[in-house]
Image (cartoon, rainbow over all chains, first blue to last red; front, side):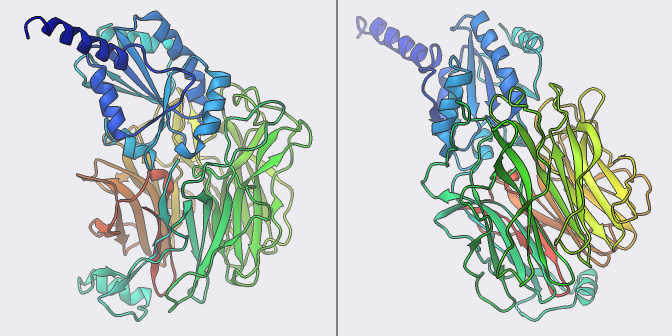
Length: 166
Length: 440
């Protein structure tokens, strides 16, 4: 058992990093329900997470995404995670994927797979008012420390992330 | 925006278990005396359970019939329709749906089988954030405005336009829809992430008792990167048979994604609400008034509340209703703590709004307002979360908004879907009706 413990620990760390650090293939738009959201956030503990809610029909959201991708490139993967979730109807998954591939090929995003937007988002914010874009900053302990509504400049996000411990 | 749910459950508020119609005046008195507690009839669905339906709206005619419309997004389990690529790309605001209509007559157990209003399948720009509107007049004509998919004759690119149709035979047939807005030449597809060249949608509708039809919409003509829309208007003085020229009422100062709402009182008074973007990107609900049937309009007056600074999509309209001497508004304010619905009133003659107050102080959040009035009785209905899942709540005022009876919960038996599903309510002299979407 003593000899196997380091191997188990290493496997655990690698699994954690696989879930949280590298993310999925950006070409794939993965469905997200409440359970998956909670799992993803749990796996991201230890990182500062920016959860960003966007939609193809939300122009301020689309204008914000390049800034968020800039931040993703700035901060090390093991320190920071951009968790983007499309609030488009999951029935639109095919063409949302196509749209994202055309305009934001580097964006790793999930798509809401719940009945409506609030069912998903209430897993982290029970009183979300369905306004987009909305972002949440989650600290390394998994606590939501800030809710940001509306498009903000990249400098604003950077300041908030640094204040969150990056 | 939503997946699977049952649409349009209609409730009748009635006294005890008796199905007799109670005149509104007597009902009001009974409520005031505490002798009556509104009870609910069973809900009646208007849409089929195997269809995805959104954004219902209802209106009543003098025979007590309830006329319901909603967006049909396809069968449960069926992927959303995808439009043809235009000039090599799909635009970012894709929505191909249909507008369905059904009628419930008094003493009928069910709605009529639903029929499609739009002639061409998929021609409705079916975003629930830009819902279709329905209204009736004293001649029992049914008037509908809805957003439609179209192609610009100038750029050849996809656009979203406002359409009007009507029925003069109680909903048995609807006339071929007519486009309300002209076709702008400007191609704004680079502003809106490719493809959608123009948008003239988020249409509001008000109809006078004698059938003057007033349609308003948010218009992207003149829009720049600051993303402000203009407010346009078109009027028919003959029950929708013909419309006058479109008019630009407000320049590019409006939030482009908060639907316009409108209400008529008598033949000369009109009230129109949109969200104006003021200094510092504050999204402010405002009302403009006309007292000459739409010939001229006042400057915008704010309905009040904490300034909501937001560079984003509030997607919130202002619910409005009128009583004898007042205009009543109910609107979500995201800057309030907690965010929620604010009720405010002003004299219809043109005063400023009184300080707004929360319609549901105990709610953790409230949204999706609807207002209806009969005489001086006002009904407010909305979504809210108190200490659990989202439910529907309501309050009556029996004195023209001076005070409200306690908040009541509408027992739908199941969780209600998103705030953007909207609630619609209306009343005639026999009953109040509420429609909304339920989780399937």
